[in-house]
Each structure stands twice: as structure tokens, then as C-alpha cells.
Length: 466
Image 1 (tube, rainbow, N blue to C red):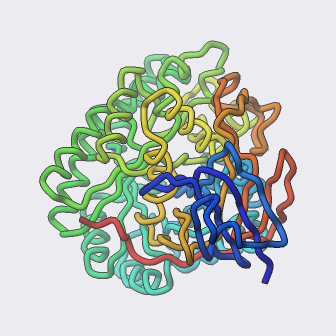
Image 2 (image 1 turned 180 degrees about the vertical axis):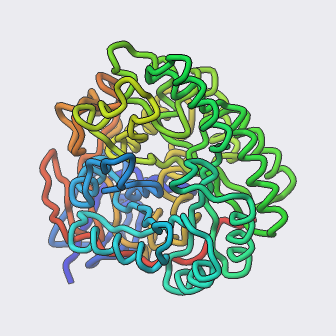
């Protein structure tokens, strides 16, 4: 069994920061010892990585991606091969993607379809959530089977009537089943019925530009849906995870529920922390690049999102990576904002943007690792196999240079999309060496990985319950 020794770095986990050497055997971390100690000095290995002056951190876990997702008459431009490779370049070593149940079909059929897309193609490890588009007696029974198999989270939508939407009765039934079988219900919390009325009215009034996407998907309709989802979960006695929280008032709903001791959790995304409605209003249809749902909000919301991350009213930062090229895909919505495919690229940028938040003083280094690695691992049943550096954990490790300067750009990124949502943004920090289960897949601006290295991960039930 091959050995790798990482010497001299500052090991940062959600729990601690220590100057330590890390010993890897095969695919696992087997030991840590204080740098310079007798124990560490006695270690030998075939591969020695000098991490002096660098951070040694767990590989990132992006718990919300949509590779190859069909949407709006097209499909997300990143495949599992290109998207997982781009994730690796950005220091992410595990993704949790969403398998989709089609209306009238079984959960199993949707899951099998996504397994076929991903198997043999991923550069890093991967797992699946299950989107429930059709809550029936049969699909409720299937939830039990999937939980037993390690697919332990189920996403429902209060948005997108006619596509993914579930009414309150269906949502309640799924939550009740989750309360029984341990499955975590994830919620897209926007009042889609009301939003569709506002979309229709805006288009009738000639308001067709991308910025109106943000105006019709009102903050109040995110807050209302978040409140309603919390109440339904309380009735069902089930935990709830609200995805891509973008609005201050929605954070307030989560905070209030958590103050009452409920198992209610929230995720936000880099686009809500770093972008705003100013981007949606960019001229010459450039605003279409920033169309996603929930939508970008005015800049003043960002402070409340950062506060929620510091107070743990928001636990996870994922990307909702769902890229569509500007040319030929976003352009489908010229003259009608409602036809712009919803989604942004970001799986490669998350770890660096969050490190920039450390530099800017929004969060601490340990909180960076918590919201990007440890908490998603605990939330979705991957901890301590993933999300930390400790004996017995998978050797998903990033040697991170906190002083490297880089400019985010479509010219240099590895995502299969023709623009960057963060074009020209200067950030400090960069992944220098990336190990996935002990194998070096990125080193000094060289990609050494391969499609098929990534393995499917079964998951336990949520480990974050209070």
C-alpha cells in the first residue's frame, strides 16, 4: 500500500488549526503528528509533499450541483466528466448531484438514469439526492427503499408549476414519510403559483428584460414559502433543509424556527454572497448570465446572509452549479425573460470565493472549512469519511496556498461554459495540490486525474439533527 506524507502545513478543520504532518496510506488518512515531533520525523513515504507555508484542508463538498440537467428545452452544459474535473481544479473532491424523477415515472427510474450519466465519468467522488416531482403512494414507498440504499435526501419544489411543483398536501406526505424513514426533505422555497401570475403580468406589460426575472420572484414570496415549509415540517415532525436561501427575510424565518429548537437548516450560495440585482440589470442582455432561482437580490441582503453563516442559522454554502452557455442557451430568453434557462456556473469557484471571505473578514478560517466541507458532510451523511482530516477519513486533501493571487475568468476556468459569473474578480488563495482518496489529481496547475476515478458514495441519514 503506497504512502504519502504531507509535511509542514497548517492543518485546518472545522474543529481546530494545528501545525501537523499528515500520513496517508492508500486511500485513507492514518495519522497526524505535530510537525517536528519525534513521531512525525520518524515517518517515511514514497511520496512526500512539502506544505510549508500552506494550508492543509479537507477537500470541499459541494452538496448542490446539477450536471447534465434538462431544463427549459436545453440541458446544463457541464457533463459529469467536465463538471467534476472543474470541481477538482477548485479544491472540491465530492459533489452531491440531483437525480430527477419524471412525472409519471418511478424514483428508481430517475435514479438509474443519473447513475448511467455519472458512472465511469467522474474525476471525484459523487452521491445523489432525489428530486421528487410526483408524490404518489408508490413514490412514497420508494423513499423507504432509497434511504436503505444510501440515498437519504429528497428535494421538493414549491416553484415551477407544471414541471417540478408539489402542492402542500404532497409536500406534507413526503415530510411525514421522511419523519418515519430518516430522509431529509430539501425544499426549493418560492411561491411558484403566485410568481407565475407576476410573470404573466410583467410580460403582458412589455417587461421582458432579464432584470424582471428578479423583480417578479419577490423576496416576500421566498419568505412566505420558507415560512410555510417550516410549518409543514413542524406538523410532520420532520427535519427541513431549505436550499439556495437568497433573501434576508427568509433567513429570519429560519433563525426564528431554529430559536424554537426545530431541526430546520439553510443553505446559501456564492452568487447571493457576491452578486446582486445590479448584475441582472446589466445591459445588452448580459443580465441573462445571472438568471437563477431563487434570484439575485439587492446588495443589502448580503450582510444578513453573512451574519446567518456566522450565527449558524445558515449551515452550508453550496453552488447550485447549473451552467448554461450565454451563446445558444441563455439567448433562448431574448424577448422573454421567462424562457432564460435558470442557473449559474460556480462549482470551480466556491472554495476560493469563500477563502476570499476569510480574507475580507466575513468568516474565520475554521468557519470556511465548516460551511464548505464539514457541515455538508454531516448534513448529508458523509461524515467523518468526508469533510475532515482525521485517522480513518478518506484522504481527500487540498494543499491550499492562501497567498496566491488569481483573477477569475472564463479564459482560465475549466467549467464547460462560455462565461464566468465572477469575471475579473480578484481573489487571494488557490488550490495547489488536490488529493482524492489519496491520489493526486491536481498538482501545480497540472491535471493528473481521470474520468472514472470518482466513486459513488452511499450516505447515512442526516447527522446534523439537534
